[in-house]
Length: 178
Image 1 (spheres, rainbow, N blue to C red):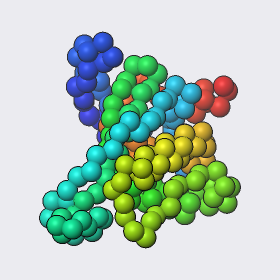
Image 2 (image 1 turned 90 degrees about the vertical axis):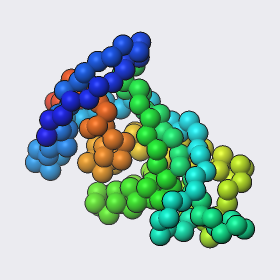
Image 3 (image 1 turned 180 degrees about the vertical axis):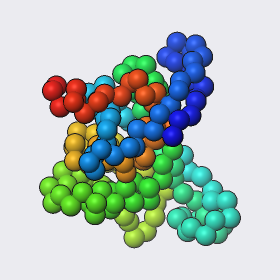
Image 4 (image 1 turned 180 degrees about the horizontal axis):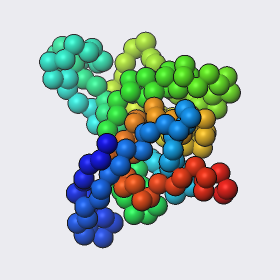
């Protein structure tokens, strides 16, 4: 899979990158990996949005409108690429469950601490600030856990393939030597 992408680099100069699929497996492992030491991931804010006619019920307020929270994650790689993605809590939960099921590593239960679901949904600033902080901690634990981080599930969640040019990726051989 090859595609091109027009982006603005850190000095706002336009660049065109040829993007290569980084999701190819080599004996069940990624053939190229992201160097987590050059990566900064942080939830920078959250927004309460109204559901647009979907069937998902996340939050119901007194006027019977349906609301959900979307977290904006800023990803900076190697001080060259900066992009933002939006994720809902249920996407974090789905990633977490999938990682636990596919990696078959019992240590992940102790390493990765996803904040739990709540019975009664809250849109209060206090609750959402605490959840944002807990999700940020989860992201930091995730990028430092090789078993979970270097998976197609995680790379897809963080949308590396769509946003990082192939030349920034490090082959497994170089990554293992460092």
